[in-house]
Amino acid sequence: MTRRATWTQKCFSYGGLVAGLASLLGASVLAPLTAQAAVSSAESGVASLATQPSALNETALGKSGSGESALDESAIAPPVSNHLVAQAPIAQAADVQVFERPSYVNTCRNSGTSTLAVYTSTGQTTVVRQLQPYTRITLTGVLGDGVAQIREPAVGWVRSATLLSNCDAGPPPTDPVGQCYQVTQPELVVRSAPYGTILSSVLRGDRIYGTNPVQRQTTGDGRIWQRVYYRGTTTLGWVAETGTSGIGVNFVRCP
Image (cartoon, rainbow, N blue to C red):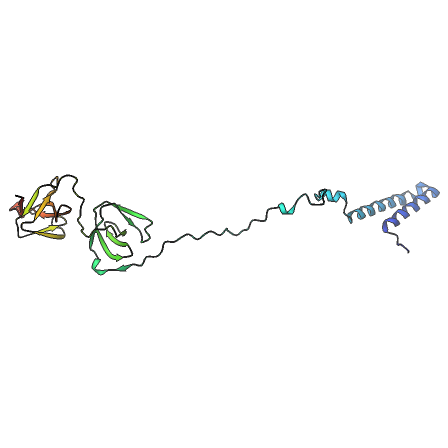
């Protein structure tokens, strides 16, 4: 078969021909042609090397002896996603159904035997105030499941389970109950304070008990009031000990 000479072969043949002629004609005549042929041969060799992979190229690319790339693509960490990592939803407090009970509007209650927290909402997460035991509170009439809204002494929501219906309930006396008295008037009104809200009343012959120590107040009209326990020794209220100007008595010491 007839083989076509490659460009490299042609270049080397041309260079040899020129060299032969140079020996016959003289180096001074053909020196430029010889140099040009050498440059052409060198350029052709470089082009041939560039078209075929070589050991030098493999080394430059990081090839290992086993044929695997030293820069293993599997070892490269995957790109970090620009998306935020999904988080579990934060649990939200369930809504509380509330309603208004007109008969409870502006009615009073007692905070009970322990400290009572007042919350900003029915969710009972943020406390705005702590009420001391046996604090008198006023309802707005708005109620929920286990909660009630109050407007005094602070606006907010409280747990209703521990509220006392006796607005003026107080702690049992730490000391022995004070003096025992017996009512002498047909009816004696019990109030939340001197001339305050009417809480109840006691009748002639009923027994009431003073505090220890005695708590008395005198109003502008000269009437003397005393804070007493009525209905036993756990409920406190104020009763008029005398009439106006301190005249008369409404109860006497128990016989």
